[in-house]
Structures are given as C-alpha cells and as structure tokens.
Image (cartoon, rainbow, N blue to C red; front, top):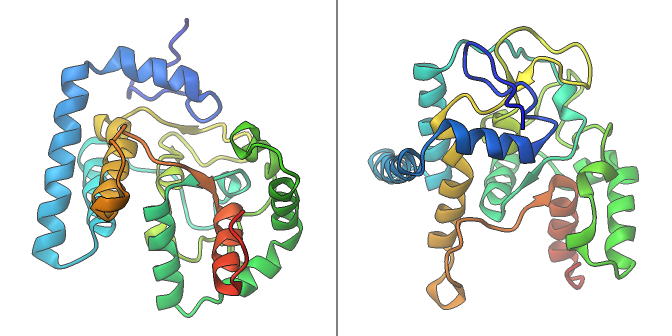
Length: 242
C-alpha cells in the first residue's frame, strides 16, 4: 500500500480515506510511542484540569492545541474557510456534552439550530425510525455537502472553542482549501493527534458512573451532530430514544 506523505510528515489523503490513514499511523509510530503519548496526554490533561479547575475535555483541548503549536507548521486555515464544515462530523457523548454546555453559555438556542437544519435532521430521523440498524448506515454520506448545523452566517463555527475532535483534526498547513474536495487538508502529522481519540474515550469512560461502566476498549460510540441534536430534542420532549 502506498503511503502518501510529504516533507512535514502529513498524510495527504488522510481526510478521505481513514483506513489508509490508520495504516499510515501504524507505519509512522511504534506501539511504544503511541502508548507513551496516550499516557502522557491523559496525565497532562488531568493535571491541567485540576490546576485550572476546568472540565477535563476543555483541559484536553488545551493540551492538544499546545502540541500543534509546538510541533506542527502554522495552520493556513482561516475564519470563514468552511469547506470542511459541509461533511458529516462524528463525536462522542463527552464532546457533545461540551458543545451543549458551550451553546448554553453563549445563549444559543438548540431548537433554532435544529430548525435551521430541518431538512437534513429530518432525513436522519426518518432513517432511525425505519428500523434499519444504525450501525450499518453510512451517516457521513447521508449529510455530505450539507452545512454543519452550528455554522454561522459568516461561515464560522458558533462554538469554535468547543468543536469536536473530528473538526480539530481536519486542518491544512500548505494553503487554504478552495473547494469541498479539501485539497489542502491532511492528518497524521502529530503523535498526539494519533492517540487523541483514545484519550477522549478514556475521559468519557472515567466520567461514567462505575455502575454503568463496561470494560474499557479504547473507544466510545460516535454519532454525527445531526443525530446528537435529535437525541437532545427527544430528551427535552420526553420522546423515546432513537
């Protein structure tokens, strides 16, 4: 398998082919390096959260941002460059909780967010109500080319500081993307980037009451933003979970 990289160690096709990205990371970093980075990021996150009295996920975002500043070339992404905001973004429960808290703090009405993206959210709802196994659905393809529900009128993310990992890892170092092909976006530059999903999964695991915990597998369930919005609405209206 060809490994598409460049002089800065970025995996050029990492945005479009996650399987090749996974193979690229396995070739680039050893298991020992990955394990060390995972443990180091987890420890640093907990220490920072305690020192600054902030939620664990907010502390983790700071730790990840520091790694990018210290080790990666400057980003060429700019405010209003939103081509990567027209695709499916999947994230964990703990990331969604952080987004909801951020929206509440900013006075953002999630009911209005849902109304704004009614067409796409209705499509997701109908699929869930059809009885199809959600695990077999290509959710990303379903919402491709649709605006992110949290995209503002000036093409910026309303709760940018609490955006999920999927958004944080879709970055560009060469130039600003000019289309939804994301021709300059890439992943796989940092060791910390490679272990970030596992760190987030661990943070969610440890925040779950012990009585509800199962064995930690290194991952947590992911849902696209539109489905999380439906879950939020169902909870508010007392409707049965979909």
